[in-house]
Amino acid sequence: LPSSSPTLRPSGSPSLSAQPTLVPSTQPTAAPTNTPSDAPSSSPSLAPTSSPTFVPSASAQPSSDPTVYPTAAPSGRPSVAPSQLPSSSPTLKPSVVPSVEPSVMPTVSAAPTMFGRAEIEFSYDIQTNRVDGASILSGDGNTITSDLITATTTVLLNLLDSAENKSGQNLANFSEDFPVVIDSAFDIMCRPPQPGVNCVLIRSVVTVFIDRDETPDIVEEIILDGLFQSFSDGSFADALP
Image (cartoon, rainbow, N blue to C red):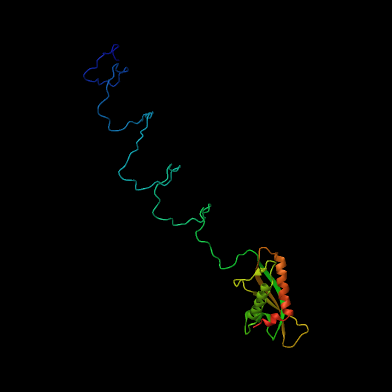
């Protein structure tokens, strides 16, 4: 048993008893040891510092492995200088806002304006010496298609030159960029049938550009009447090469 009245000052040599003292020392050491322990404590401090550091650590060399994930928010200020290399993939959409300044040089079109363009279709039948519709379109062994186009163009030009409005202007104009076209040739029965003669129905299209002050339906009617009249008065046959 320990003494009922412990000594206030410990002995120079610790006691070797198997039982520890029940009462600790009434005067602990005021200052900690100057030498830290080799191993960290098993329980870290629970409270962090009240003021975090504002200056990050600056390593001399950047990291060899970049971060895999980008930052959640972009930087507040964009880079001042653009990249030296163009993008490998151009943008697929043009800019939404057109340029404010017009082009210095005007665009020049070889074809006339599309305003007033009219395609007039008409059909007529012809007789050939054993040449059917398919051979006419292919031009195999004959020049019927080119001859009909030449005659139609000649009649049309003469008609446009003579058809003038009250101001003395042509009702419509013809452009070589839109030539006369024969788009079909169908074999039909001749009435009455004639031996060695083929009858073919030709479908042709002429393109004209009607003056903006004219009525398209009236101009088209004038052109059709002139074309059909050329068959009856012989001017179409006279225009054949």
